[in-house]
Every structure is written in structure tokens, then in C-alpha cells.
Length: 295
Image (cartoon, rainbow, N blue to C red; front, top):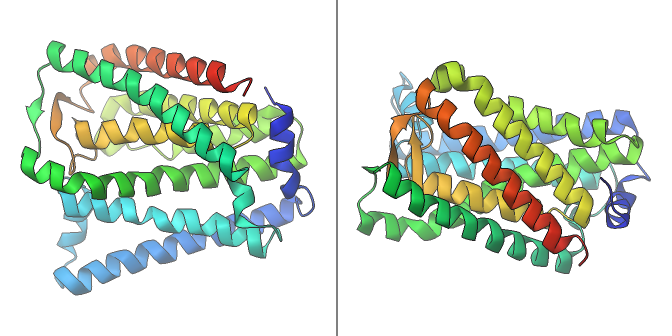
């Protein structure tokens, strides 16, 4: 699974790679994320709605309006900043080491974005013909917000890749040789963070499983290329389509041009579509891996 480039990617984490430091760094990252998230929501409350009952917070967390979804995506700034500070303060290494070599990261991101974006685009066009969608945002509103959505999704996906692939995977690989530890464990944590039975209902474990599979794919792409660029490009393309082009009802719909005619808790529809989604995910992974494997 690992490549010589991955060993170079992990090398900066080896000098201060003890489990005690990893625990301290993880706790520091979580606290920074929590602090910045609380600050963003607190600022929103002061600026827009000082309702002491906090009903506005419940409405904001549904992320079914542009502002609420942009606010939620912006909180991932804290998730990105946490590992960066932990790497510098706890592990005594530069933040850039969380990404991999800059030129390679940018190249891998661009190639993965192109491959995954092309396949996902074709899939969306086919899907729109088979299952006519419901309208989301008016086109004029959507196109005005799209640049902000690109930035917000880049922050969200980049933060998750920095934390799970650029920090946890690196630090675990610096201490353990087995990919069961440095690839599978972060992937499972990533998957379980998508556990939301309130929204997904009986489909919740399908959602967790799909997210865990993506975590494994992202871990493998990082191991194969020696940077988080490929995983980030794939992640960014996937989430950009899922959040801004056609969003599943019951999920984060505030920035979507279209909505699916079914809800995330619709057992029959989701169970019919999950195998197709997983197959497409694997296809994209194999193509990215093949293109970048020998570069």
C-alpha cells in the first residue's frame, strides 16, 4: 500500500512521533476547532439574531439556507488550524509537512480534481435524466453564491484532509508500520463522524460505511503519492457536486441548485443508489491511482 514517497511524507513526523505527543496534539487540535466554531457561532448570534432561546441555532444547524451552510463550512477553519498548530507546537515541525511537497500537492490535487470532476459530472447529467430533481436555489442566486461555495468547500475538505491524512495518518505511520493502524483507524474515525441517525434514519450505517470507504481510499491515495493533494482533489470534487449541484434532501442543502426527489432517510432509494455510488467511488480511485502512481 505504501510508496517510497509516503515514507518521505511521513519522515518529518518521526522525530517527535510518540503516542503521548499524538494524544496531546489531537486534544489541542480538538480544542482549537471547538474554540473557533464557538467563536463563529457566537459572532453570528451577536450580529444577526440575539434570540435568548437559541432557536436560531437549531435553524442554523439544519444548513438549509445559504448563510447557515456557509457558516457551518467556515467552522472547518478551526479543524484545519488545529493540526497546523499541533504540528508546530507539539511535534516541532513545519505546517507545510502536513501537505507534502508543495508542487506535488498542487499537481495531485489538480489531476484528481479533473478526473473525479469529469466522472461525477457525467454521473450527475445521467442522474438528472433518470430521476428529475426538485428545484433548489434560483439560478441567479446560485451563481452569485457559487464562488463563496467553492472557497467554503475547499476549506471544509482541506481541513478534513489535513487532520485525517496530513496529521493522524502521518503521526500514526511514524510510530506504526501496519496500515491497519495508520490507514484503517483514521478511516473508521472519519466514517463514524458521519453517524447521524436523526437525519439518515435506517440508512445511517450505509452512510457511515460509504464515508469509511472514502477514508480508506483517501489514505491509500496519500500513501501512493506522498501528499494529500490527490485525496483533497477527489474529496473537493465530490463535496462540491454534493453540496452545490444536487444535494440529497435531509442533508446540507442550503447551497444546492437542485435537490434529489428522495430524502436521505428513504431506505428504498438510498439502498438502491449506494452500490452505484460506491462503484463510482472505486472507479475514480483506480483511475487517479493509475494516473498518479508512476508520476
